[in-house]
Image (cartoon, rainbow, N blue to C red):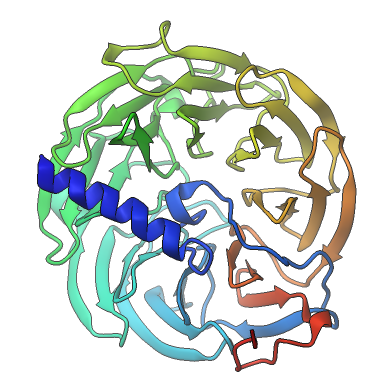
Length: 432
């Protein structure tokens, strides 16, 4: 146990050092969607503040994982081959492209097998595809191991295709599968790909609620790490090293046959926000106090929000406020502790919103599928700062690193930065 705690605090220490320069997984460090970066761009277009753009082989909806000068993405080409791409963060040049499997399983028309986002550290990248392929490459593009989770743990019986991303913590990579078949949480050794533990997650849920597309997170609870998973009408917590179930909470069910969980849990200051949604504007966002044991449905509930909740976008917690974005572009801002609204039902733009918002430098960024990013002030008062447009179809959530925002359209990756200061040149690092 002492060794595990040392690893845990070492991870925290390393995160505090690299957080300003890395975005190591979907929604960045800790899966929170926030950054301490300053001088983030406010306005951009095809001709303004565009550091670079790169056309990608094939297409997908994964978000970049960024470590130092290396950026990783996944893609799938028309011949159903699945790829991991490594790009130079400064220039956007594709450094290497490696195949990690082939195939096609059931998926919604808006996405393919390259929806889960990769996770990375300074020397490796781990990628999961909707086929069940899970692979690890080193930073030079050498495959270290590869496996087929469908072959090892059963077929994916999920209506719209696998969307959950892998999570790296310490020496383990975590993968969740919540669907109409036997559901599970799996931890594999990051170096070998071998199973370390598997926790069955067969919880009572009806109809489409059995399916979940959310990504887990690891959070600190009173000095100890917990792995938080949301889906199938429950939020559950696991001991990351052993897979022991620590606690569970019901209460995210939606009274509709098409209720389901796509948005991922997010957390800050010991408070977890979990969402579920369904048709006919039914849905809920639930705030839980982390920690405890057994069934904490009643004891850990802080508040519940039943209006204007998202289907796809994960809420953002930033400066003690929760920004909730509905798929039709209606946003609300709530107090993290009480759930009281600061502002409600503000329209950000027309069109469809699938990407999750991100925050930094006192701003919150909301991206729709048509490439419109609405930038608002992170405040108790609703204030739009700017609206920016790029061409493409955007379902991937933005990533932030080195004062740059990376926006992935299905077939193009854009890097936008504030070039007005004259300290950035494509392909060359900024001067201090």
